[in-house]
Image (cartoon, rainbow, N blue to C red; front, side, top):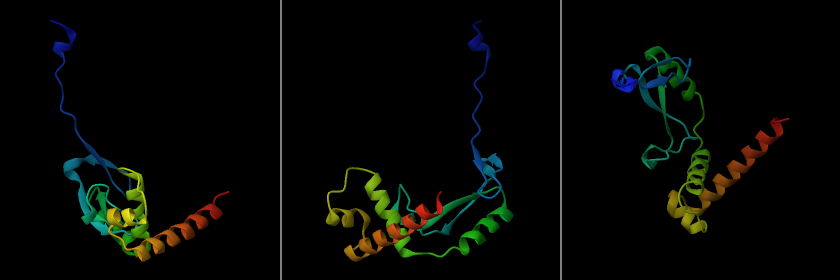
Length: 130
């Protein structure tokens, strides 16, 4: 009998990673839920924009991560900037402001405020880096 026929294929176990302690555990053991996060734009479903899926190894760690996100301010300009980033990096190129508005669902004023927010925070990140 050939050697490859002797070895049975084993089912692959999918592992998850705790967002707090980085422990690994099987997918079925995960505690998951959504928390508000204005930096999060879902790549697949814009209904979930502004929500971040968190994964924890247990209820206690889930509560801690939820608490951490609860102290983070929710800034609409940050959310709009995340939507713009998604539109500019996924799919065909955006040809203008009108198309950007159609792809993001944002009004021109919101796009302007998002760009200003992004530029302000981009500058502060550059000043912190050596």
